[in-house]
Image 1 (cartoon, rainbow, N blue to C red):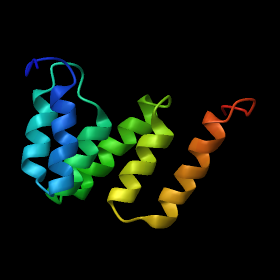
Image 2 (tube, rainbow, N blue to C red; image 1 turned 120 degrees about the vertical axis):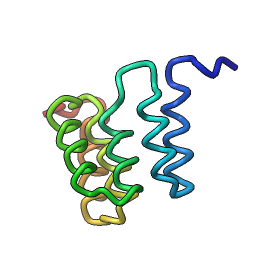
Image 3 (cartoon, rainbow, N blue to C red; image 1 turned 90 degrees about the horizontal axis):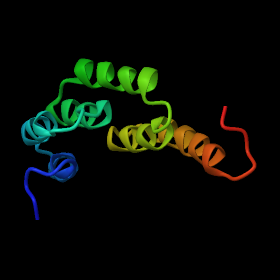
Image 4 (cartoon, rainbow, N blue to C red; image 1 turned 90 degrees about the vertical axis):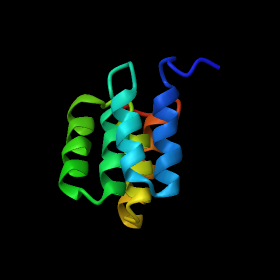
Length: 104
């Protein structure tokens, strides 16, 4: 393994989120040598209890990460316990990834 390789810190964010350790999640997101993903930042801030920062990171993802928006928004709303929103994003992600369907 290469601890300094791109992507390793991103995986550690998800491990820390599952453990409920927001401080570690945020630190790992900030240590990622590639561009920090708004998705990982949103998760880290939410687990830390900073909903305003989580919402700001999610807004950044919506504005700038449209190619990954549906599936990451699905995961984020599920982590937050927003079941109805998670199902909405699930439906959107299925439409986007179904061959022959519109990607709009």
